[in-house]
Amino acid sequence: MADSDSDYIASSGDEAPKSKSNKTGKRGKRAGREKPRERWEEIQRAWDLGLEDDNIESTISELLEAGKKRRLLKDETPLQRGIIRHLVLILDLSVAMAEKDLRPTRYLLSLRYACDFVREFFEQNPISQMAVVGMRDGIAIRISDMGGNPQTHVDAIQKLRLDDPDGSPSLQNALEMARGALFHTPSHGTREVVIIYGALWSADPGDIHTTIRSLVADKIRVAVVGLAAQVSICKELVRITNAGDTSSYTVALNEVHFREKLLEATTPPVTRTQKMSANGLLMMGFPSRIVERTASLCACHSQMNKGGYLCSRCGTKVCQLPCECPACGLTLILSTHLARSYHHLFPLKNWLEVSWTEARRSTHCFSCQSAFPPPPAAALKDTPDAERQPAKTGSSTSISSRYKCPDCGMHFCVDCDVFCHEILYNCPGCQSLGDEKPARTTRGKKRARELSEGGAGAPPPPPPPAPPEPEPMVID
Ligand SMILES: [Zn+2]
Ligand SMILES: [Zn+2]
Ligand SMILES: [Zn+2]
Ligand SMILES: [Zn+2]
Image 1: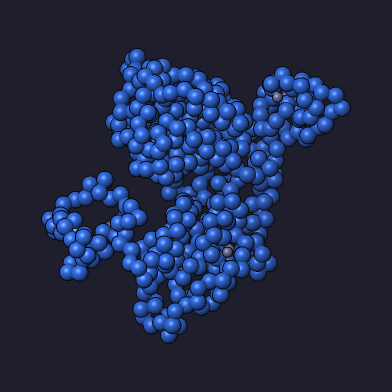
Image 2: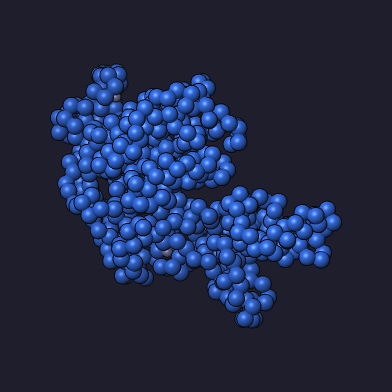
């Protein structure tokens, strides 16, 4: 933001185009007075960037790369996270959602993103459970019950498309219903509430502060994504239930920002208190799939089917995993579900930008073999200018279109960077050069062993000593 601002003012001098001169003049004066910029002034549109004809192509490709890269800069500190989560998603279905400031309407957009959220949540947290609650007509309505099957939630949310948003939202009623849904969840998992809130008011039957206090007593954390403006009670709610941290309350600036902030809640939260992180044993069953000659009823839905899984303790048939055995209450999962939750605990390091001087080392992406742009002549001569160039890129994009893994030092393109950090969760360089890096390989093997052995442990084993100690997990 700051970059584009200074660029803009610089160009507003003598040779600004006539058509713009009025506007830029005003802006220049405003900047001269050094008045602090309001939030709404910082919204950046593509046409504000001042594209010039000669470098329009490179600017566009830079913008595309920046967009891809922006999602990647995640916190890479290995922290203890609660990977068994219980979450209630609260949707605002009140009349405030009929606004069209988000296209097509707040209502339809938030339903669509809620479905995306459900799918992404179970993709990232396959051994977790969630429920969906709506706020409409001053009451809370149950949309889907606590469960681990994404399709039931998505179907329930999609049914809402037929209705219109109506009435007032009641934050207190919805929170009380969420508290009820989370009340019986086991203590080894997290308890979370995520709210999509479009209204600027709440019609509550009682004192909401009492509800907030009971949420704290029940160890429930609340995250809110607002669609209109900041609401004091939402901020208060987030601050109190997250031990003073308000970072999980955001107001969406536009559609993309809304989606980004909502999907942020799919990453498991950091374990905060010592008590929560105390190791405990959790019983889990790993049933294998059976195929029967004749159809029989499953215990979970009472539906006839010919296949399923038999509970490893009591032999009850269930039709899908993960689930809790309806007869004996044992958690039944597949080992692949555990493996999928695992990458949150040891995130892949962020890859670094590569300067032109260093870029000479590679001509192709190590992973997909696509060609990199050749270094410009200036960079080859080791001029001080070329040395300075990477530092100038204030954004996260690399000037040489190369990204380097800090461990193996290989260069990758931005697409591989995105793919490895969002889907693969491994570095192709580190994996294929395993033999040449003995220190890390042993650690990798140890991790793999921990994963296969520690399958039944709820909280993960503490990560191997990494440079930053897990102390920075304290949120203030
Ligand atoms: Zn079933
Ligand atoms: Zn059972
Ligand atoms: Zn590549
Ligand atoms: Zn690597």
